[in-house]
Structures are given as C-alpha cells and as structure tokens.
Length: 448
Image (cartoon, rainbow, N blue to C red; front, side, top):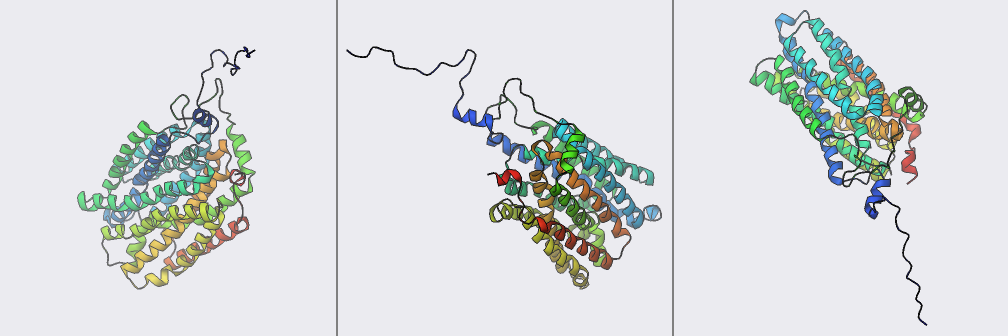
C-alpha cells in the first residue's frame, strides 16, 4: 500500500514573524553590509564637510599677507603677535579635540559637526568685520573649538560604514579632504581677497560663505549610522539599543591602550611641521623668495597640498595591500623621508628658485600627509574600540594639536634654519617612537 502520510513541511514561522531573505539576514548581523549607495553618500558628504572646514581655517593664513603690509596694523598685529594668535587658536583646537571625539561617541557625529560648522562661520565673519586685537584673539578661540569638531567625529562616521580590511584604502582616499582643503583654499581665497576685492578681510567672508554652502549639504545628506528599517541598511532587533559607556569610562579604557598613546606621541612630534607650512606657507615662501608677489606667494604652497592629496591614497593602499593592514611601517617610512627633506629645506631654497621651492614643498607634502593620514585617521580608528573610535581619534588628534601649537607659534620667533632643523629632529623622533610597533595590527584585522 502506498504511503499515505502527509509530506513533511518545515515548521511554520511563529505568529507575527516576517520572513527575510538571506541577503537581508546577512545585513542584519553585519554592520558593514549596507547599501553601497548609502556608504558612498556618507563618504562624499563627510569628505566635502572636512574639506569645507579648511576654507575658513586657511583664511587667516591668506589674510596675514595683507595684515603685515597694512601700515595701520603694523604695531598691533606684527609677525610675533600673529604667531601668538595662531597659538591661541591651536590651543583651543587641542582642547576641542579631547572633547568632541568623546561627545561624538556619546551623541553622534551629526550634532557635533553641525555645531562646529556654525561656530566656524560665525568666528570668521567676526574676524572679517574687526581688526581689533581682542576681537581677533576671542574669535580665534571660538574658531579653534569649532574647527576641532570636524576630524574625530567624521572619522567615527566613516568607521561606522567601512570595515578594517578596507579602511586603509578607503580612509586613505577619504583623508585627501584635508590635503585638498589646504591645496584649494589658499589660492582661491587669495585670488578673491587680493585680485577681486583687494582686501584681506574678504578672505574671512569668502571662507565663511564657502563653509555655509557645505553646511547645507551636510544637513541634507549626512547620516550617523545605517538606519533601521531602510532598504539595504542594518536592521536592529526590536527593543535593541546601542550600548554606550560614559565619557570617563571611554577615556579610561582608551588611555590604557599603549598603541593609542604611541600614536598620540608620534602625532605630537609630526604636527608642528605640517601646521607651520599650513599656517605660514605664504609668509615662508615670501621670506625665501622675496621677488614674488602676494598672489604668487599664496599659489606656490599649492605644491605642498597637491602632493598631500596623492599621499593618503598611496599610503593607504600600501598599508592594506603590502603591509596587510599594518599601519606603522607605512608611517615610519614616510617619517624617514620627511626627516631628510626638512633637513635640506633651507640649503636648497637658498638658490631662490621657484621650481626648487615647489619641488621641496611637494616632497614635504607627500611625506607629511602620508604619515599624518596613517596616524591621525586610519590607525586611530583601527586601534580604538568600536564604541570608542571617536574618543581614540580625538585623543590622538588632541596630542597632535598640542604639537601644532608650536607649528603656529615658532615661525614668528625662530629663523628659518633653526625652525626646519627642529622640525627634522621632531620627525626623526616620531619615527623612532613608532618603530617598536612595526608588526602590530588592529585586533579586528588580526582576527580575519
């Protein structure tokens, strides 16, 4: 007799359960399997956001040329005073780095970055409206705090959408934002200030207008993390809430990581050279090449930024592909090159050649931005915990920002020879600090 038992069927889903596809289930359990469109939207809007900060940050560098040539300001805003103002800005920037990174872990990058943009725009407008010393000093404190709201929160934002195995390449490309900002902002603002409006105050107003446009784009297109319930984005289980530790707990756990402390020490030693050229580039060029005009003095440092755009892309690929997600070897080799070229800067620029100056600035930019992007972005996010990536990036960048104070202050006080020799020694020490960690990899990368 034929078997009359009913065919077996799978157990029916429980009441109220909605079946999901395998692809949806994978996205549910893996935070990085999200919509490619959303990932690259976040990449684009956060890249534009940080580049936009530079159109306000670089306004003071461009305005210095006009301020130093203004006879009405010769006694109140001398080179030394401008150097002190830079130091005030960088001190505020350092304080902000230690605060905003942890706040982005606690409250999300969106709120922090929008607050920073609004503050930066307001401070720039205030500096364009008044040349009083107290106004400049107060506005630069606000500017420093506002500018520091960008990097660590945006690094955390990117880390939420891209896994460790891709971060060297992806964050390497993404890190071109600050090199591009340093490249594009000075000639753009210099052209508007001295060729179009013939006023150093215009540098501040034009920079503020540029960042205002970026602010609108950021508000429209940025997201902190994949949102639940959206197609192709990470789903959360009903009632699940992210675990968030308090700010002090995050700081304590991050400070216990020796690698984060090593990155902070290396970044402290690296940052002065980059910021000296960033904040004093037109003045340094004008001092070494007195025959060039103001517009040319703002354009020649473009070589520094142009090489800086390519450097993070190349070093990110090298760290992922050649060194298998080890960030230290790429950073140490970059620091070795930087040590040599900084030591040769003054003898070689004594020729007075524009070509030699541009070539040296290009090599310095290549080396400094390669090391910078590895230390301040990729490695800082990699070695921070998932919920403390902003805190780790903030701590590393805060240490670097303390060093950057010297980059803003020392060019107003030291001769060129002493200045570049000091920067060369600092780069050498940074490489030596990182060298013992040559083979170290992030825990998440090692587990792959």
